[in-house]
Image (cartoon, rainbow, N blue to C red; front, side, top):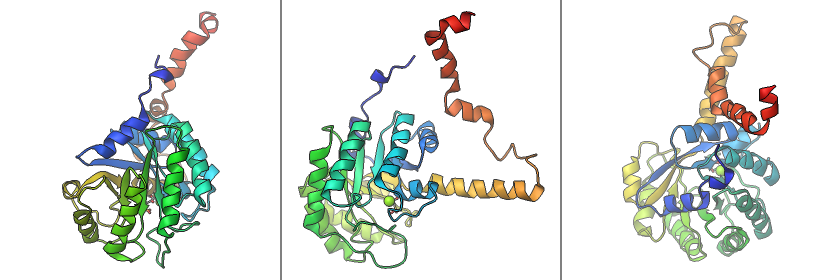
Length: 300
Ligand code: SPV
Ligand code: MG
């Protein structure tokens, strides 16, 4: 039987993905089950999306969920898989001290890294209409340093996300901020945009000249090929919310069908079988474990 001690080093796995010249596509998950689905599909890492975790809790992506509620979810996610989890730490749940507290816990759980964004606390999702305010650069640099000092593992990744483009402040401001965050020791810069063409991302990347790896979440500029972003220095391409959105569409359709036909007949082609559930959660392992740990019971 697999031993926990043999599990590979998730910290290193994520750090290596960030350091790769090629681009790795990672997918969002929002609970233990969706984390397993991401792993089963063959992805090398998971984005623990704040938007999706909030949505799954029935909450909005503006820090309605407390840091400890979100960490409870990410702990289940991380325990469910052998691939690394990159945690969406929003704006750090407060000041540098909240950042320290969260990073200490995450790194002790074995979560491989955090993304911290330079918005105020409480944050608001980047795609909501309205203005966004940013944290002063030196205050955010303090948060990044606090994160580094609090990490319980040397290879815990700290990704600095600038929302300068989201806030409409332009590539100059994004560049200035990214440079300060890079100098503060961030392992990568997450450059976010809500443009539908993504041209400002390419403009930023050209100016950045691969000073350190870039991370993107092309939710709005989906037509931009991965290869173009890879050439521009993107090491991690985040599909940020697609399993959460898939689950909403699927659950709405099935709920509607059951209500309309007033029956649960004829649904099997549209929903996972129970054996799929048992396989995903590895119920077979229970029987194998029982043989080892309760031989008396089996023999009786
Ligand atoms: C998330 O998935 O929670 C993100 C990406 O941070 S975005 O929703 O684009 O802000
Ligand atoms: Mg988020």
